[in-house]
Image 1 (cartoon, rainbow over the protein chains, first blue to last red):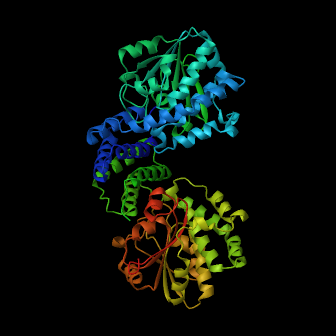
Image 2: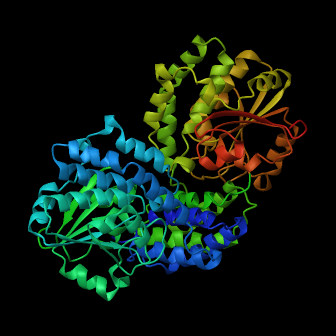
Image 3: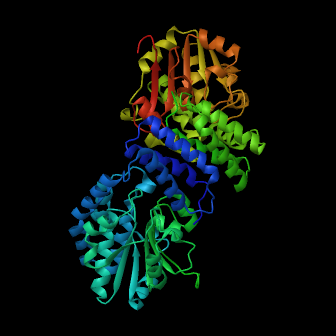
Length: 297
Length: 297
């Protein structure tokens, strides 16, 4: 997805938030915003938002000297999500269609996204997800939900590449990965995280602490953008990307980076901003399972 | 009020909205945002947000050649607000404390603000204001409400300067002005609008069409910023500003421009953005009647 002009205000918002988290004082925050502002005319809108966000986060890192401002937040998100793991699992076990519930939960976990929300009460969001009243995701909120294709693709695929999104959310991914493994023991699942810190995107340590390693091979995409930008990926990753039988992509950032890609991909995310909702043609806050296959659609 | 760094994303949002309303195509919109971006490092944060917004709106006007992109919206807001005038009036007449109700309505009318909200459904907002369930503004939403001081200042003042904010909102101001005149026939009320178009700020024609002229003298402040920035005001206006016995200032823009001013002022507005809410120390969406008097507080 190309960057819309509507993304520009959001870049500044996100930059300000990350600057504060990096401990920058007001003067330094201003310096960061000024530098980003001077770069705006140089940004080609053909870049996807994660490509722009990567450059912005690089600027913040250089000026503040802080490598991973979201480190504490990521640890907290992981531990909060792990604390509800058993309850999430129960939800799945007790449901009529375990895979469907696991898919829905994996998407619900995508609410833990500091790139879009800037500030976020993870505890509150988790409570909402677990709330009994909220048990079933309303059908009208699943405006795009290619579950049948997802289900049958799973059956026929041997190697599944699963692109991680954020810390905390990784625990919800574990639920889905366990469900896939429960149904099909013979699947090889490869779970790809980011190479370097960017916003609250999951790194290897987050995937490990969430327990993903029990059912999947954890690799890095080689990327330090908040989305799997192929031009930035490592050769090893690109080989897996090219040959995987099925690709599951989590989150807005990965959708933004890969929506125009040639490979067929299942995008699982919540449409958290009006720009995405408009691009995908869905409602704001919708739970999306979108199968993009250039050979078909 | 100085400009906070948190205002910067909003400048871009507002600029994009105004560019679209001016009929700019995507390329022109990008040109506008690029030019604003290049100016960000030159903006001193000691400027108030309306001073910055004025420069931004000047850029949009110059690039698009459109003098008053909000003209149609302003006309519609006026006519929608006028269509509920009788119902607003009834609310006042039937209430226990007519002045209080008129003050509350005048503040409620401040919801018609394209500078803050970018997009807005005026019809829906008016419905909400008129909704029977919504009759009384909850006390907890009036966190800062210096009504007693307002009431007694009215009594002892002969000349009252009333600083207008937005089109549409002017009809709500008329309700309050009529109530003041009903109580105190001898008061001279001067109603000051902006000199030139800026966002949806009220101009002379808006005040006239709202019927303000029946109870007040309509003047211009000489300003083309979305707030009464004193350094931009006409000499005639400043004379009135200096000598008025009481100043009533409507809206966020006027608060931002005048909050550090030496003159005692009654600020009536809704706290529509987190930056203002933080500055004033109130909740987001609160109904504010704030008396600022440097001699006292």
